[in-house]
Length: 441
Image (cartoon, rainbow, N blue to C red; front, side, top):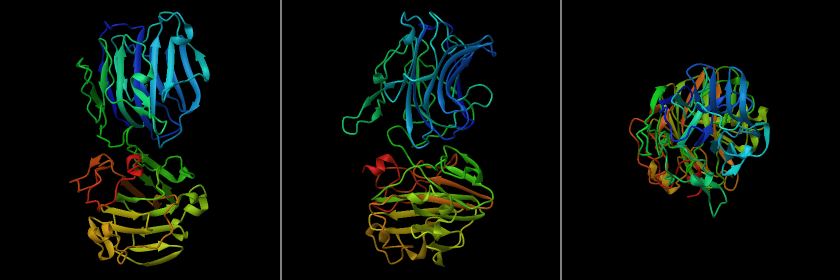
């Protein structure tokens, strides 16, 4: 959400101010800053209730006021995975006679029991979240925004619910997965927003609709059921990076060469993605074997590696410290396409909808290697993934299937036979987006 957040003033006559449940799926983009999920104060700074990821990476569920913090659960668990969707259920039930059950955190269906701070709510303690004050989603005090994505936000007024209402364990994979239409009674202040898109219209039937108070709320295809690749904010040498924005899909860098990996990669299959150059320093896009990324010196120049394959802004292709003529040069405003046949070890690059070196969609779909940038690569069964190489003042926005470059939607979506992801240009038949759904096709 970056600097985007939602607001709604709830009724001052809730079903039960001492009992509520908050359920939310979220994905983190930035570390080392507070990511607030839900927040409300009493109109000043006297009393605050919030659920947030602290700048130390721990989840905090607390009531705090001018006299200090009363209830506070702060996990020992750290939330540092920028590639994954998390599910949190926060239960507030201050009328419960069992002290430990007055305040509960569940993560991905499992109750948290290990806490750095464990101060449960006092009996019948009130919270500001369900008591007639302005409720914020995605922003806390001052600049404490949630920098990432959020989805399927449920708030239930008057009930303390289990996580199994909102999710379940997949019988095949054993992973926690979403229930997109939970069966609940929401209560007076209850709501259900961001269901299957960016709608702030309440889906609970209560008409507790929210307002986008600031920023731009995009309809991101990245969701708890289909997790898409993003630039990896946890990569080493982040001091070279000026900024990562819009869910880690727009990278801006000044000075010092470095190649940035993404959060997902395949070991076999056929993948397609796009990248738009907004500011051009020295730029290259391509693929690199993932075991090179933890080695800082190796990834300064991925195209000098035997396992790195690049399309440079000069129009040349690069691999194993060798440059050769390939296609047209590119500059600011150009959109690059990449079709990577990992199974057969072949890669093609395009510019503004035209495949370079006279290749065509038909040839790429058929696996014809005559006009490929590189072929006969030993990529099948190995972990290769996209990279963005940047040196000087460079800005590149990636579309791994979300349908946006930054916060700008693609102008006119091309055809995509896989139905997985939205792209500017036609996706060659047999290729799909680099996402969890794509990995499992």
